[in-house]
Length: 445
Image 1 (cartoon, rainbow, N blue to C red):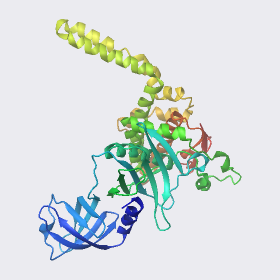
Image 2: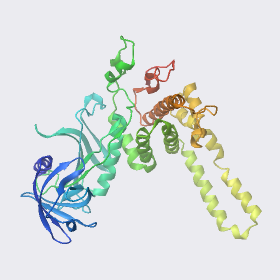
Image 3: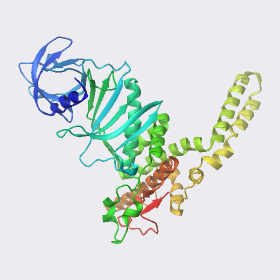
Image 4: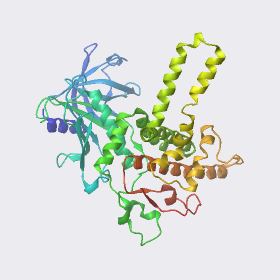
């Protein structure tokens, strides 16, 4: 089948229909009504099919009149005769994860999800990663089709290479949208660029979407309820992301696993309780500061290399010199980058290098870093005796969360060359924190 026919066949799995199911080890067979649900390809296991049909290491083949499937990953829920089979990873029989092919990834979107942050209101953009061009767009393939985010390669590569790059794209788009869509991912492969025959697929369900606040003001109307000024002109702060800045963000995540991990951790922090968020966000900030400083302060890297090479050299002669002399040399070598660490690696120094001005309040928050790293409360004098005390501290942690998030947003967006307005979430929510901040609702960078 070609790409469109294959997609339509997959979409029709939303409707229950019969498959012949074969357990590949025992070659036992059974016919089941199967339907794709949020958890995967599902059906109920009942008599006369006995429990031995499903073993711990079972692999399954599913056949209808068009496609042969393999299910390698599944779980069973319940007890016979109401046991439910959930195959959450499945693929067409001829899907080859090792061979280089052209690839497409489809991620099903919610009805409200739009690529609304692109300049000139475009719905598609292209990036070059690892010398391969990729297209990212929002697609509806026919009148009955769902809405998808489509990522497509225009050269051949392995599935592992494609997945790595698409992850960088998905988390980058997710950061800008405040929502990383991951519930259903379908990887398609083709030997030809026209996708007209022998298209195979690999489907993965049950991934959890991640929620985050949006960093930029590309859809400003949604914040009208926060602002009492009826004359506030939202059109003046509408901001879009240039292709160049977006490509730099994706490239940053694709090339640097620490930065990629920091973005994932950023999302994870917003899916945890407010009282744990600031500590995690300080870690995110430190990781990003370290990685960005390597780019904007190359002398730091040079100094570290000099230091590391010097340490390797004295290690060779450790047995030939006095221990006191060795310790003195090593201590002196470790001082090589101390001045650079003090002057350039500090959080404020990196912001200054990017020409981002930190407010007095933001500097105060940076000063709380060590307390959070060591598990202390914001206020050492605060004791929690009742629910009201806990509510007070939770509000303060919420406030710190949004402060840190705005700082992180400034850091990332300024580094990738974004020009526009970012959302000052702590100002928008100042009444909730019982504060009166002399700041703008939206900050221009």
